[in-house]
Image (cartoon, rainbow, N blue to C red; front, side, top):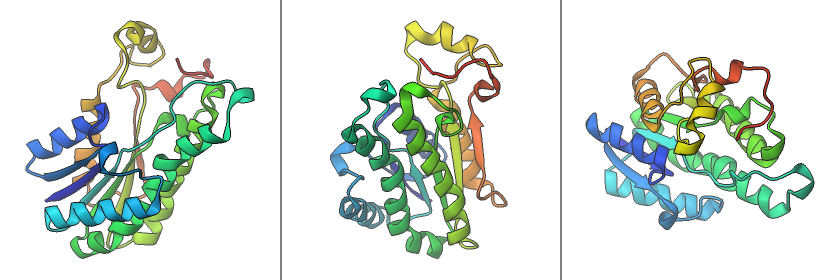
Length: 219
């Protein structure tokens, strides 16, 4: 079992990589040093390198992302948009596009690491919300495009990588009254990797955050 995890050196990506390795997967955990996925050619080179080192691909996890920084709508720049959409939406698409042939051969799986921001309007994170919404739509589009040979699913985390000083406030925003951890996201990825009759769907891992209607902005 062979997996490429983009963003595999970040907090969430590292947890995913570690969980997969614990379950017997050979994992290529790609980080920024492995190329800028906002560039289609760099995405292609990464997939080639990972597939060569692993001997093929059975699972692609698109966990790379940039541009998560609060900014009023009036101050958002073109550079902010490029950063948010780059690795998150454009990178997810081209890495998946370049992986599709190998994944068809292995009847593999793609898992998009989305965000509850795809489904909530956060005024201070306009570009991030838009990029994650685009990525969430790609989950559905690619599930149709690559079926029946390749399943494409998503995981939409909420507060799972929270700084200690924010934990109490973020916990109060969830229905469960606590924050999660990157391991919770990894658990969902491990499930989807083996869920043979699931495609085009996203698992929301947020403790019920998205059901709270009283809030419009994250921390």
